[in-house]
Amino acid sequence: MNYQNKTIVITGAAKGIGAACAKVFLEAGANVGLLDIDVISPTDKERSMSVVCDVSDENAVKNTIHKIKNHFGSVDYLINNAGIQRYGSVTETSSDDWDLVMNVNLKSFFLCAKYAIPFMLESKKGVVINIASVQAFVSQQNVSAYTTAKTAILGLTRSIAVDYAPLIRCVAVCPGTIDTPMLRDAINLSPDPAAVMEECIEMHLPKRIGTPEEVAELVKYLCDDKSSFITGQAFRIDGGLGITIAGSKK
Ligand code: NAD
Image 1: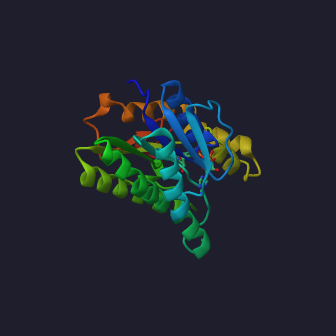
Image 2 (image 1 turned 120 degrees about the vertical axis):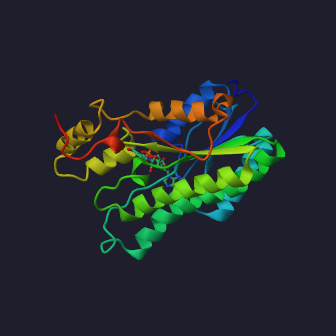
Image 3 (image 1 turned 90 degrees about the horizontal axis):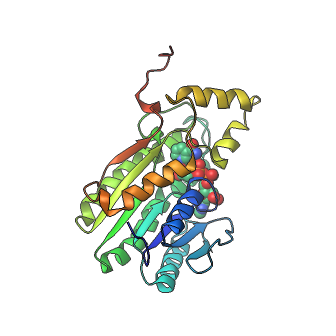
């Protein structure tokens, strides 16, 4: 599909999956509005606009999405991607950490959709992609807030798909372990990061972890008109992580 004169808003675009999405859509000819709490230096000054924006802050989201619409003339696609991880079971998680994870990983998806969808309705077309996780289906220990937020994203995805059809589609993408700074930071918390990485590799059927570029290519396909019969679904890109029974090693 030709993305020329189309504008895509990507949250958490400074690194990892968000940065890979920005690259893929720029290469496809789109204008990209890049939101992050970190500063992003634009690789293409004409077709990219970077804004420092905490996506859990309603006023910041509203102003930023209006700014992007005014600059490029439309908002056609939204990739809700920004996310953080905090570790702990329910009894170990503080209320502050719970609220932080819910605000960044879930409320921001609602806020960005709330302010982007009216512009999509103006052009009578649009796609919202919500980056959830394989943890929307299966859970590991000590990520109670994260797994709860990721599961709720599937409900938000269905609601958007139902409420704004047929003009707007909404799809959730659920990655397994992907090689990003979030993953590297997580495994570096362990006294033996190399062993944790080996475990991650072993858990996936292709015997490797995924790349941000693989997720970005799926996101691009799901935005494309070629996938116009797909909405409200959750797509796993998880190297089979969600279909194996623990202990079923050869
Ligand atoms: P990352 O930490 O590498 O990048 C996340 C980006 O989000 C960072 O640039 C960060 O600055 C930004 N961000 C964090 N809080 C923000 C806020 N309040 N406002 C604006 N930006 C903010 O993470 P990633 O691995 O690329 O993850 C991207 C998404 O994919 C997340 O939603 C994550 O939960 C999900 N995911 C990642 C994996 C994985 O293995 N890496 C697996 C499943 C799902």
